[in-house]
Length: 88
Image: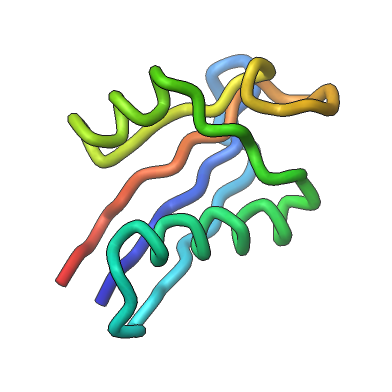
């Protein structure tokens, strides 16, 4: 079981969250991108751009934050955080 937790933060308060489960036999990378796409769909957001610091943070800690720099459109919150909470 693979589970990714998506959290939307504003002024240090969690304003929205969702957990995406994935039981497929796909690669970890594909599971992450698919889960992020589902999170963005549920939150009515465009998919963020993975910047170098996002990639480095995710490799080190299995979590990262997407702030305004990762989105083309303006966002009404401080950042979107994703975190792997369970892996096979």
